[in-house]
Amino acid sequence: MARIIVVTSGKGGVGKTTTSAAIAMGLAKKGHKTAVIDFDVGLRNLDLIMGCERRVVYDFVNVINGESTLKQALIKDKRCDKLFILPASQTRDKDALTQEGVGKVLDDLAKDFKYIVCDSPAGIERGANLAMYFADDAIVVTNPEVASVRDSDRMLGILASKSRRSTNDEEPIKEYLLLTRYSPKRVKIGEMLSVEDVQDILSLHLLGVIPESKAVLNASNSGAPVILDEESNAGQAYADVVSRYLGEDTPHRFINEEKKGLFSRLFGGK
Amino acid sequence: MIFLKKDDIIPPITSNILSLMSTDTKAQNYKKNALEIKSTSISSSVLAIYSTDLKQVDILLQEKISLAPEFFKNSALLIDLQDCPKQKPALDLSALIEILYAKKLIPIGISGGNAEQNKIALSFKIPVHTIRGSTLKNSSNKKDQLDIVLPIEEDKKTEVESSSTALVENMLIAQPIRSGQRIYAKGDLTILSHVGAGAEIMAEGSIHIYGALRGRALAGVQGNMESRIFCTSLEAELISIAGTYKISEEIDKEDNNKPVQIYLQKKSLIIEKL
Image: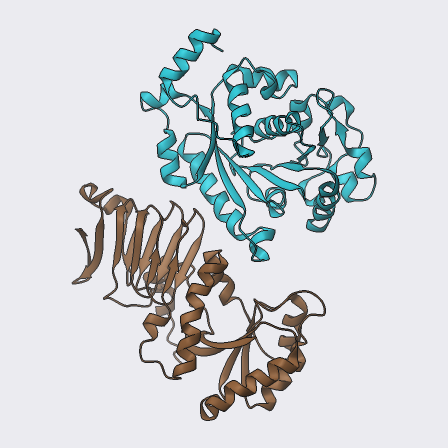
């Protein structure tokens, strides 16, 4: 049975799509057949970050409306044959998504895929609610600043009460915290919340810390998920996150400045 | 299959608690005192249905009634379908209502039904409530719900007029209360984790928080001046007891991040370190 993972945050611009792309690619590279779905109908970005925007013919909304088959809409990644992308529609809005339609698409995907990564839009409206409704696991992407932490807290409340699992009184969604754009240097001088501060507020299992890195922007611009940039801190951090998600015991890195310094010296620093 | 428990049939009006605290000046300009619309909450039995097999429900219900026939005669019941199996065919609500009428029970509300069942209820002039959805369900965990429900069930079995209802309606929640969540407890409320900023917890009794209180906590919301708030770290946005409140700005910085209790003395809030 496929595992449905929602990548969500509440707040915009914290790195949901970057994370979705990296984790989906990471899972696929580990040999698991993975699909990644863009739920941000109207503001689609995932295809850009995955570098497949020129290959989009049909999209998620077409599949829901029966205008194309799932097979026609899924785009196979050129770098990894285990990874498939289901892009969002840019010309529609989020009302085009229906709970029934989304449920059916996920059911169909579940027959064929091991992991289904849902890239949630920002906000707590329809798109975000539908992205998380069917989830088994939730990765809550948070930046180390108060507004993002507050929004994540709100999102966690919604995850606990408005999902399929809570409606059916099943085991609740497994929630993981992913701290992105983390800068140990700024934490040290008190400009940024520390991992402990965020953990204190959210009381959540920490899946990983992604350091602030130029590699992320470069990766987005070049359409290659940052996890493929194995030289970069961010790429390595995402690789750790994927291992940890799969149950491997990988120690946390990039949390303290000292370690980062050592790394910079060893690998020339990115 | 079914059980009876005490619950409120009318959810207390909890929205805008703060606005209710100030008196409405507009209303004073009118001198038409022929009627008044007030909010109250009254106690009633809840009939929770766990099966769509009405024959079975009928038999079990009759068993319960025969335990205390006088108590059940003409007594008001709230039908709770929240935990009734949802798959088709759904529970035949009109048949259930007929069974209740035949047993001289008076259904006065329904909650947790589907759209179809709500429609049927309205055709019987039975109002549709959402109380369980807003209170018990908020604990979001089935286990928590059982914690709350079970003692009540037992209480009902042994004696009909329970002497200590406060004990019965307490609520315990083990998970963190997240931003945007609202919790309402009929008795005391105990939280085993923190209360996030932007969350709102209310209790008719006292509130105990074994963690940081970062949101709003309102104890004694039905006017119980004896209720108190306890927390292991005070970082609240607002604290209130029986309508007397303090916002974050008015809380002495000395008391911030400390374990405290808050109580009412001569109409003012006292924050005392523990």
